[in-house]
Image (cartoon, rainbow, N blue to C red; front, side, top):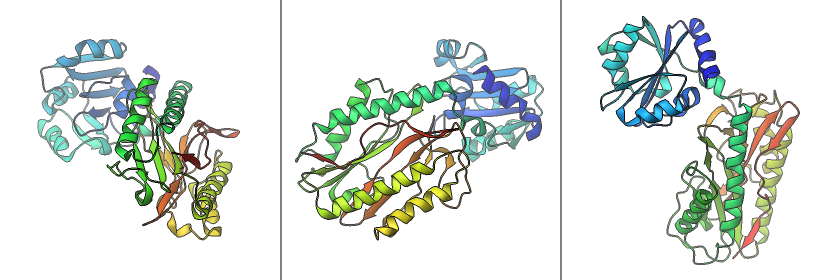
Length: 362
């Protein structure tokens, strides 16, 4: 953690600021606070500068902050925590005249409060932490791989309970329980179970719809280990699949495998999207695809790099990304196959292990 904060502090001159402010609280993201300090409480502010690592929180987290952040100066405030006046006073007392804030990690209201409180000039300084979060270290990769392994095992355990008459909601709940039993801190996001025509909704929330013969069942889920997330999508079918279900699944799997084969440092998101789309076009279903080929995963379920077409993103060693082509037709259903992949100097290492074949259940 100390090295991470030191690296950010070393970039402050180039950003034209004396210190960087990272916030976490209700409605604000936590990943950068946890990444830099290790703090997991629900309310905090970090001030980082050369020679300064300050964590501001409230009395609820006195013991937790001391245990999780032994290399940080911790300032405990009254209930209400890191309000604008307290942050301003911390900046003033330490001589921070120009403080950078993260545009994606602050509300307009909080920014107004900081500026009204005085103590420093607050200016945008985004991307300083995200640029470092993107390349995963060995400990981060180990946590993500552990989270992926939990999902693989939980999915296998849940498959044996999937039968006609079980609701999407109950199947999603069982999957969450199985992940927890295997050590997940929590699901990485709201687990998706969508059956029959509802599988054509890429981010469908589980409903009371009950699985029935002939249904495609799309399951998208992830687990959290030490704050790091995994992401996996597989498709099951209730009973023997028909010819169209086999055809569409096979086309999506070819698109997945072709994009996966291109993963290496320097490969562009446009290249991966284009290769996958060619496979879907050959099957006459390229118009069924509604999203990009993938995204970065780490402390957040969606982080850099974005692999949507047109972003110009290129992969780099240390990236952990999803490869997830899909095909969706309203009234019929949908197929998505998603794996979690580590980009290495030699190419790709798939962190997910669940079979990609169309699985017959029930």
